[in-house]
Image 1 (cartoon, each protein chain N blue to C red):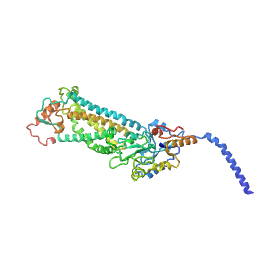
Image 2: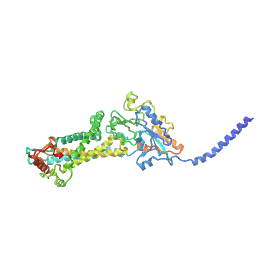
Image 3: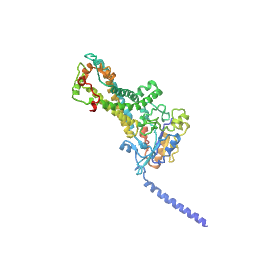
Image 4: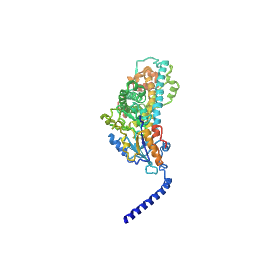
Length: 335
Length: 198
């Protein structure tokens, strides 16, 4: 009997519990909170910051960026904008140079060769120039390969060969950046004295440097055009080196958004640099008679110096005149 | 053919990081590389959510578009894979990827990058399915064995879903309908240019 009473009591309790539950259920459904009402929302976060960043428990803290759709803009830059900038700058410069050469021809030595030469660049200067120049050409080709190789070269040589070539080009690009940077620093230091803009440059510029016609505006050791090249090398070289090292040492200085910006600066400066150097190569070789010798043998004809760097020649002659017949003691500098 | 996708139900993710561990173990991913990670947003504040993220195998994948050597390819299942033999480790896919998926082993001196590594949707690489070479370079090829990615398969709360995009979208929709809320399919709009209406 006792056990029957217990079962009955249990059944009643169970019933009562169920009835309470049933009564409470609609109420709790009505009061139910929506847990996502206060939660973080993807679109909202993206609108606020343009990217979503949180916390990760793995050691790689860079991976805490959950989403950065900004990569889309960078993709547009890399695949479209840069192709246009680079294409216009480099092809445009080539077209200009070819047109200039065809119309005006090279700048001739008007008074012919005197047969006497004067030292223009010593061995060290030429070594620094050619070290930087060699690195620059390899850096330019391997860099352009990253931007233009896939559409232009890859279809010609196939995926495997192109990958192999690009791998070596990447190594060359990374490692030759060091001698290139040293070269830019040395160029900055050894030629800074002759490259400070002065009044003579204004006149030189006004007369178009004498590139067209028979004009020969006076110039010291470096004319305004060479000064422009110098500052392009120093500033442009400095910029590509600084941005290049940031790309080479990922995440030392910034996150992914900084590296996108860095790549943009690096590539735009680089293609403009290449375009400027094409002009430099032109005027130093086929563009002007007697110019290449300056960096080749290191000496130029006195007549060439008279025509293109008259003030510099005067300076050199004055110095030589002072030294004439008077043996210079080796200790002069120390005195 | 199914279009493979990932979906992380942020309202279920408990940030246990088992997906991260399972991935590393399954593919013997080298030190320093995480093909998958769990990011916690608003950590410790109301509305905190955790999302497990890896390569989303995007439609019109940005990584493939910017790759200078064309190392990427998309399988018939919509999985974005790459060839480590072609990759030159330039880092461009990392700049373009919205989800930070590409990773690079640090090789030798400086910050020089090795061949890129990323989530393969457990689908290996261009080598023969299940071959030793494929395993060494890309890890296990579970898809070829008829299995889905391990991270999602072993997710204890079934927060992480992997598989045919339409099916996992349906599962998520039903969940949202049943429980009455859902914070959405994270990353879908960026990756697939669509989202799940719920």
